[in-house]
Image 1 (cartoon, rainbow, N blue to C red):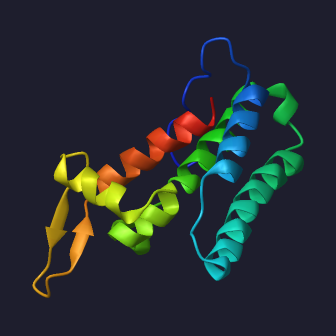
Image 2 (spheres, rainbow, N blue to C red):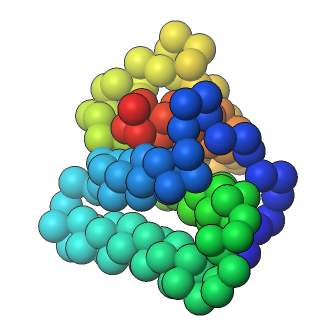
Length: 143
């Protein structure tokens, strides 16, 4: 269930409050702009949340260790931030971030994001920067 270190609970928080924040944020992240993509996007978000709830439901000892809930939160956050190849295009990131293409182009011109080009002239955004941007959007949504 857990693929990395378990982050601490935020000051004043509880494991269940952290879970509620991440579930809210995962379901609130803006999705793609077209109706066909939107259904797939929503299905993926629901799948992530359902798996987290199943992990909690199936762990009979979860009430004994609050860090078990935090492990579910950390795993759900990691999955929500997973970057797919479409997110590395200007159009794809604009759809995922809920902004228009000109905003993403502005991010590349001001240095918020970097673009690289391959031999075919295809422009790709730098994955680490996209992941950091999505993390900041996810953090804003969970407040």
